[in-house]
Every structure is written in structure tokens, then in C-alpha cells.
Length: 165
Image (tube, rainbow, N blue to C red; front, side, top):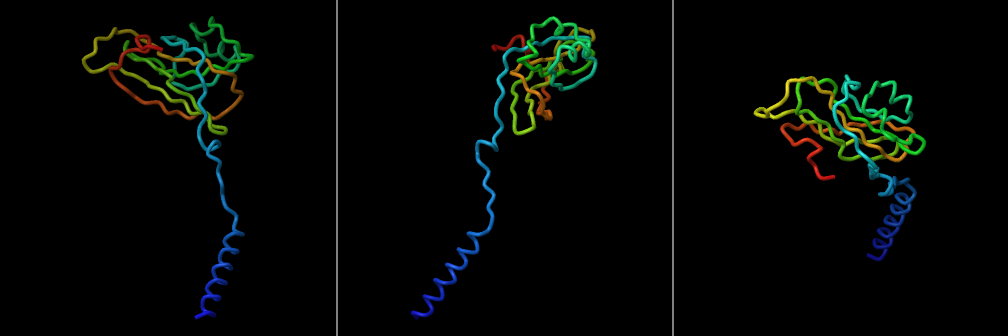
């Protein structure tokens, strides 16, 4: 019985030594979670310069000018210290469409953009006119990152101008 216990203990110690030598993957919690990015200011509306739907990170006034924006060109964005994150829905046939960036998070080289894209509800009264809905968020300067869209499609919601900031 005594030899059996010693043999069992030696087997356990050997197994522990072997398993202890195996590399383990430890991911610190702080690095695995996305880090929120604060929105300093919002601009939204309808701008005929935004003909196509897109999500874009803009770091230079020249890049914003190249898009042909009528509204944002005159905004006071300090591109030396700030970036502009733009969400556009492109050309839409009526009013009642709007876009809103609700959150921005960074995880490594990825930038996750959360938001909503609204279309008018079935029984909603709308104006028959072309619109070009957009929402732009001014954030602290980000030099690069791959944008990942997490935009929720909704219908019949009140426009962002009616929201409490």
C-alpha cells in the first residue's frame, strides 16, 4: 500500500511538472476589451455632398473638402488635434431618414462604430424631396484604424435633433 501511494504521488508530481512546462495563453482583461472613444461634438443633417452611403475617418481638412460637403466644410474642426468620423446614408427619396453615431470603441487596430440608420415608418408623413442624411462625430485625433460598422437599421424613430444630448 505504501509503495502504491508513493507511485501515485510521483505520477502526480510528474504530471504537474509536465503540465507546468506547457506554455499558457494569458490575455489581460484590459487589452481584450474595447476602449470607448469620447465624442466631443456631433454634426448632423442633410448634405448633398454625401451622395453615397459610407463610414469614413477624416483627418485632414483637404479630405473633407474633397468629399464636397456643404455643411461640414465650415465647421470648426481642429484637424491637428481632432478627427471626424462620418456616417452617411447617401441619397434618399424622402424626409424621415436620418443617421446617428451612438458609440465609438477602439480595440487594437480596429475602430467599432455603433449607430442607427432610420427610415420613415409605414404610416409616417414625409416630404417628397431628395435628402442626404449624415451624422458626424468629432473625436480626439486617431491617426489610423480599420473601421468596423455596427449600425442598426431602425424605422419610424424620432430624428436625432429631438433627442436629449
